[in-house]
Image (cartoon, rainbow, N blue to C red; front, side, top):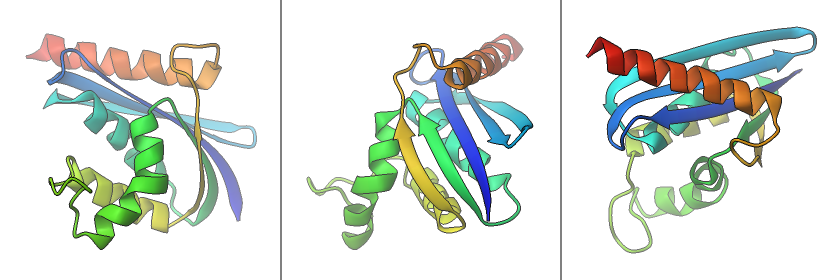
Length: 147
């Protein structure tokens, strides 16, 4: 099974507002950058989208180390999602899970691979996380300017 590193980030100009997502994938000597944007979104939706798109691009089952600066994404997919699914996508406080559509999409993508989720501090000295930040911020700005 191929071992891939995936780095993700999301950004939003306003929350909600124009947003961008980005992912950097590394496999041996190979690297790929992907990014995109949405008109009216939130930072959390962009963080989730980055992880989904990064996993989605992999065409075969891989061992993936996913590094994100979003504790929301890391904790959601490794801890909280199990309870949400048992309760029918309702949180412990009986309120509906926000961004359920994206959590379901991420859960599906995670099921296609073997994943190891890691957290890194955002805007710190992590080259691939910094590159994702540059790409998603650029995408959000471009989306903002096109409105």
